[in-house]
Amino acid sequence: MLTAAIAGRGQKLKNGIVRKPQGDPCVFVIFGGTGDLMQKKLLPSLFRMAQHGLLPRNSQVLGVARDRSLDDHKFRAWAAKALTELGLTPHDPVWCDTCLHYQAADPARPEDFDALAKRIAALEGKRAGKGNRVLYLALPPLAFEPVIQNLGKAGLNKSGGWTRLVVEKPFGHDLESAQRLNAIVHTHFDESQVYRIDHYLGKETVQNLLAFRFGNALFESAWNRDHIKSVQISVAEQTSIGTRAGYYENTGALRDMVQNHLTQLLTLTAMEVPAAFAADSIRFEKVKVLRSVAPIKREAIVFGQYSPGRVERKKLPGYLQEPGVVPRSRTETFVAMRLEIQNWRWQGVPFYLRTGKSMPRRSTRIVIDFRKPPVALFRTVGRRPHRNILAINLQPDQGFDLTFEVKSPGDRFTLQTERMQFRYPAITDSLWDGYETLLMEIVRGDQTLFVHADETEASWRLYAPLLRRRSMPYPYAAGSWGPEAANKLMEATGGEWTT
Ligand code: BG6
Image (cartoon, rainbow, N blue to C red; front, top):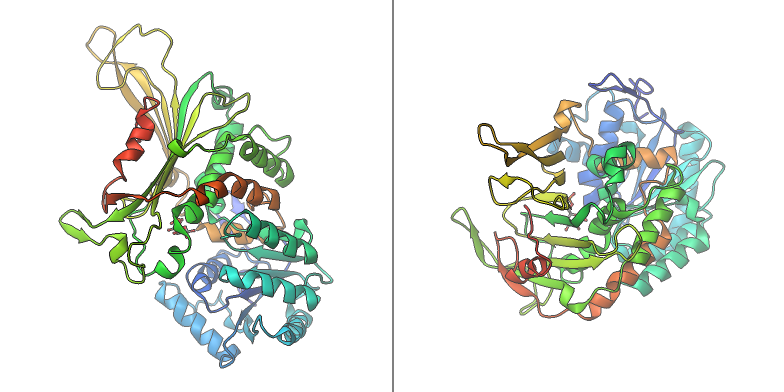
């Protein structure tokens, strides 16, 4: 049993709330069972859930991969090593590693999936109850289709309990491939069984965005074109492409970050109040936002690619110098764009999206720039007169900052800008990794934090035309905030990027 010792006890938070395991015992069938995602995210998340007593009692994990030389015993040794490398303690009594199992299966051999079906049934018969299954595709995208087809043919799309299919990103690489993948998924699974992952939706601050907007009448009443001048959504990464050229050369920043992560932040920021706090209502409102975005004009988008640079005397390579990148590659590592949402709430409010690799530091934030008061009654200290700015920080420093104007002491009615701040350590000792949250939601059967088929297609419909029109990216020095053209994009409407 994964949670032998403390299953069911739950986790007590700093604010006194006790989190209890929810959902039924199940078998986590993880395709890509010895891959990177399993090693770095899924396995440690399952471990931490077990540690906090948040996994349903008797749950089992079945790693599936092509390697036929592995068995349960070797898989357990592999898992113990992976956990130890992450500083976790696989010999902790809460972690019973006899609940880890391994089965070899090759997508090119449908008969392997019949054997897999038998193996899952045997595990359920012995320990994990009446047939609740999480089928998690932690696989490279090319493997999605054959594995889903094989699951369907082997009858693994249904069981005596519930069966949930989890599909990792990227979901398609353009509109046609996303539509084809959705069609294959829907041949074998009902949409209510499908959990498309975008790990940004597992981040606490992203979820808090909904609570913040719809739990505070003060902000929601000002969340519109009458009060907001512009919105920026920026995901700056300090890391470069490193050794990921094999993946990144065929992807680029638009596919890797904008089509999914930034778009999730966009829709949650811009959506209307849902009819209920339920998956269907929320996902419906998100799709409506995407359908209201005007086609993106050529002059409203800037592509960039990092060139050699420096941060604090340290030399950084350019993208073209990274191992595996083809000479003269045009793959973009930076995108900035301006979007117009043509609906009643947002008409005339520019939404700026920006993401890049090899930037000066990691900073993911949504910045809501409120309008100035219509009449300037006061003098100001500092550069920007009379603006309230709400910054929602996703990482590294999760929380919210609101700037507002106060009277400068001593001076006769001169204003200066001050800040109200919320940071998570004030209410919790530890924040969950997104994957723990998402795994818990899958077991609970709540699709709110997962991407609907319509959403994937609406998003590709918006960005796919840009893929075809990608121009030569502007160079920007590694360790800088991107090409100058991205600043010009902002200046055109009188703003600037805040970092
Ligand atoms: C992944 C992208 O989906 O998200 C990576 O493939 C990117 O290129 C990563 O670095 C960013 O995630 P996070 O949670 O570190 O912001």
